[in-house]
Length: 177
Image (cartoon, rainbow, N blue to C red):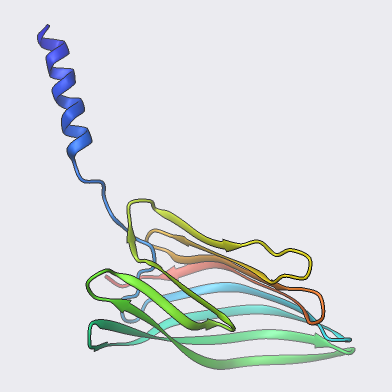
């Protein structure tokens, strides 16, 4: 009887304990994310871009009820188009991610062209995905985030007139606590 009572009590404790919250996009100053990058584009001429892209949290500042993370995006790649090979070296672009201080909702409209995303940074599940299927004639995308790793996979497709397939996969990261 006492063993049964103990098991019931332990079960109650386990169910009432808070589940841990995972940081799905660690945005500490200096954090770096290294990706394999690929893009295929067809506008009457095929163009292939293969390379690496590094994202670095360049600065963090407070603005009202938000923290703003400025991300430096550096691309090193080879572009093959119309029989020519073009070397892309240290191509820089910057974008911002906003975090609501009270809800921890991250949002950005400039991480990737034409797509605005938002999601809760701290969640009970260590993996999170935002996805819209790419169908014939309809653009689609997919973002995968993993606890303590951030964005692990990204893909984008835009059929049919301006065919574009773009993807990034996390290779490595440097995280500062």
